Amino acid sequence: PIKVRQDLEGGWAALQEAARRVGKAAADAKMPVDVPQYVASFRPELMELLSAWARGARFADLLRSTDIFEGSLVRVVRREEELLRQLVGAARAIGEEALASKFESGITKIKRDIIFAASLYL
Image 1: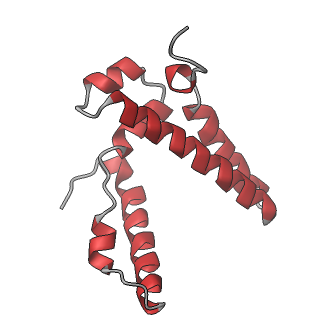
Image 2 (image 1 turned 60 degrees about the vertical axis):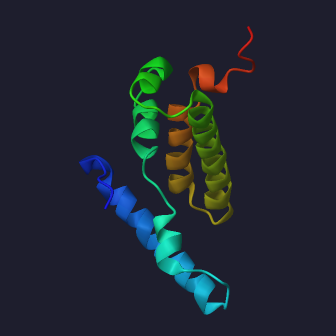
Image 3 (image 1 turned 90 degrees about the vertical axis):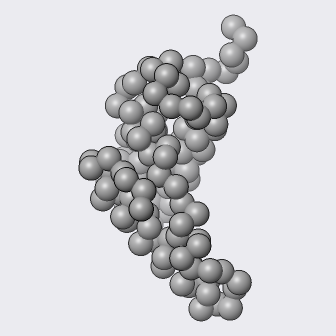
């Protein structure tokens, strides 16, 4: 099994359980899915980097700590911000303002610096 940093274990376990439920629902709907393989397709390697970015780490420091291409890291952070924006809208649609505020707080923490620059050619 993949070792996840202790403070991220709860989130990783919740993600795996959600993936199991989605995989089982797909299988129950007669969709061709191998549930264990589907669950295994989720990889936690970028969780630690995204967590560090949200806590204010510098982009250059993140790149020095991994062998992941900088474009891949930029794409992950931007996709996370897009997901959080969609979750804000969904939370508001069902009247969950407190939850929407939490998602907005996440957006504020990750939407910064070079990753969200309008152009890298300034």
